[in-house]
Image (cartoon, rainbow, N blue to C red; front, side, top):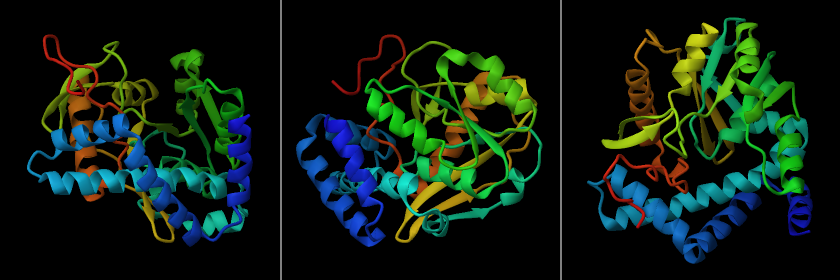
Length: 289
């Protein structure tokens, strides 16, 4: 019931000016920072591990900003999924190496977990002439699951593969020219993962970006989505050269190295609320207590 009411409010919020929504997001972010203590500790620990040179005051500031950006991006789903299409187009600016996504060459899009990941997906599916695919994990709440699925399939020719579909269908679509929008920079288990550095910390990392690129004979094109005052900047970066290699660990390490450089440009917009260092090497204690 609560989720249905919340979804109804999100639909209504699509009519509000963006400045009002961002103000509401700032207030909500502060509330989350104040009351979500366990998640606040996760963000603080993640940032402290990745930026050990920063002072406690600076870490606190980044933690507050992380919650604000998180809340603002969540509220933005109202207009992304229910707003006037022309308004959506005007607020989503695709910049950079657009040509990388305009051909029929097999392409894996490396989309890291920045708060603007849904804005990036919406921009590509609305503004570019391609069938885009991605991998979707079902939500436990049926109403929320249906809402997210509908939102992510609002524009263009968007296809969402479930985890149960397996790699074969995904690779088949990739080979015929449907770019795969992949978010491989999180991991919940040791299964099929490798430990490689992430901000100098040995981190359980999925090598799925390298594997899909190899199986699909595809290039890898990073797309970094940045929340701005006027909407989002969806930055398409040049395709990586000499990638993938035959070394999964080396490829995963390269992915993390590139990701670190993207995060350094806007550290508070990364998804630090996730326990990125939950899986530890044998014998090492949990960093989250």
